[in-house]
Image (cartoon, rainbow, N blue to C red; front, top):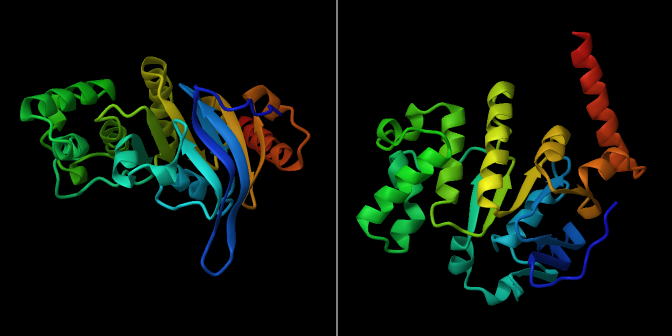
Length: 260
């Protein structure tokens, strides 16, 4: 298991004993401590209800910590204007969250339009982003979400998150709703994209193979706590019981698939 280095100028995201409890007193996240360095992809791996999505929402202040602090570029999220913070962070969710009554171009250009970009720059950026995610602008800019496949909608969701060129990207189960072949294809595209863009990324998933493929490091979340931070190699050889259970499940699935 890796240990956390002290926060420095490259610590873009930092959790300092961060926790979140509901008004009822139920604790969803407790004493979480980690940093995400510039250009790193941290995957938060855990089962449903483990607290990983709550951790993600603390980063862009969709919820606020009830204990500890979350810092973005050295500033507490509470010291950021919430709108400015969210425009500084791209956000991709499983069902993409595309507006059904907006065209692809209108969806992609939402934040640039709010920022007051001129029409020519918006059109150019929309075309550039479609090319970046492997879609032809002439064919797709004028379409509506219902006219797209699941994989195409997910690509548009990524393009929209990147529209204003934010330094940070949050992704909540971004590929979970896709069929297995499309999911693997888009994972590979994502890796190539990150190699080019070098964003600071936090991904939430419950898929062990996805965590191992996409993450610079893996943060294992269980019962509202961070159980450990691992490189892919360290995770595969961890003796920590929860990590070992994920690896055992992955091996069992591989053996099953080989037997088919």
